[in-house]
Length: 304
Image (tube, rainbow, N blue to C red; front, side):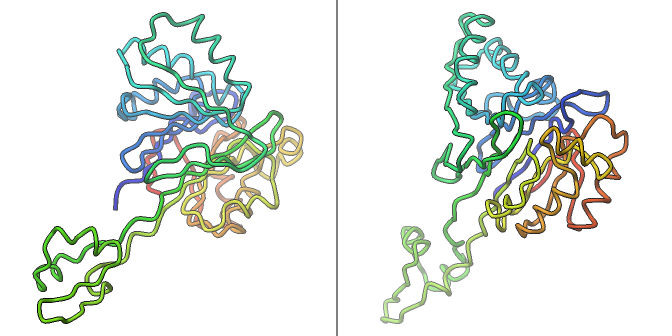
């Protein structure tokens, strides 16, 4: 099975602290590198993660609050200084487009590569990127400004060839593609070898949802049924439920309620308020609802 990994670069909320950077993640999947949000300090964290700058092809911005996008222009400028030539695709709310264009014109000269902006409609679920092996969709959220999450899904793959069966029946390598596509094999004596004996089941497609920031949405689980791993903001604990309501954020318990209703494989907590010096209280509250819950921390690498 190919790697599908999430690198946590920052999991704090709006106020950076000595313990946490603001929101940013890198996802490695099917030999592609994607970035989710790009807060202040992201490029320094990206260096620490040892993910190769040159492989980063797409950046997905959830909304236009500084703790999710202040690092973007700095990272773009650094890429120019490093001699990047490959295009960088930036996906985000429509209003980001002209502002990004203005910043690039003002802060960079002879950048050396093209930044391609793709406007995302944050009010509906839609495919924002697709290739032969993965799909990225937007998930509408509710925050104080237009905001969406992103769902990264593997496309179904073909089954695995059983080499011992290929050898047993003397099946030439030229037939591998046909057998993966479902063909049976007919021997020289006319015996039909069913496809089910020649292959093992394909790996189940994996999926990762990144949801930050949002108020608690009781119906949100309908967009997330059965995904492998969910990152859901958990800015507050039960002790600050009024603040969660006021500022359109979620508590750890509410994040766990979404995870449980959706039947996800595991839940990752993040976007912690700076008022918590120990996030264990958030973890305890979430685990009361959904046991397979984990705290995120900078430089964590999570297998989806």
